[in-house]
Length: 105
View: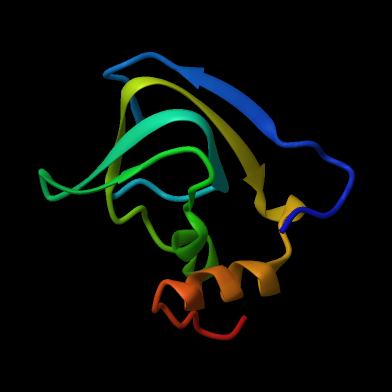
């Protein structure tokens, strides 16, 4: 998924920290390296993501706002890649694997 010369930004989050808020714009794609995050939509938990899970690809592909809030449920480390460091075709494939078809550029 990664390309270009910029390495990912790695951020550590404490338990209970809100990583991203529903409705905010997406600037990057993220990979959970360690820990676990809860995904809530309209206040209801819909998923938990652990090491190896990627999120944010759909919002980046559609230039939309985030569809959920992510909160660390334990200490969590996230790698983040901005749009210039990500292969859009790989993001499309990842989104398609999840049942989402991104509109053309």
